[in-house]
Image (cartoon, rainbow, N blue to C red; front, side, top):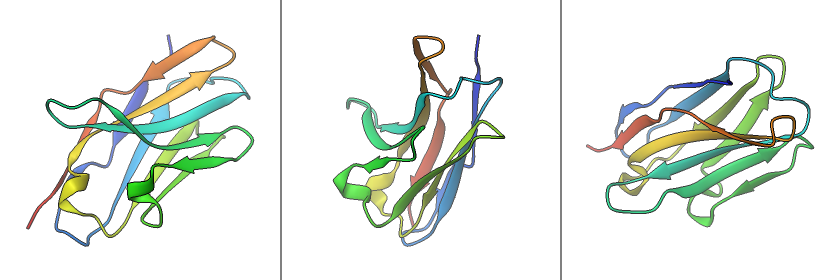
Length: 117
């Protein structure tokens, strides 16, 4: 069973930056999608950004120009660099890895990001 371990959340002031990391415990193969989602109480989990194994990236409109997703295949790790953070970015952030090898997806445990002065 692949485990995903997230890190990097915390409290930051508006306009600040954070970098989230999510490392897999073992290889998920060469065909995958690595994604970040976020969720606030009472709302559905929403997709924030994804990176495909071919390098293609996608972002939800509200984070375009502020967030950057990247991955390190050797470390089996996906990152989310978040800049110019806003209070509305406050949420629990989850990473997800969809693996063709395993025919399914794995989720991290979540990391809290709070943007407040």
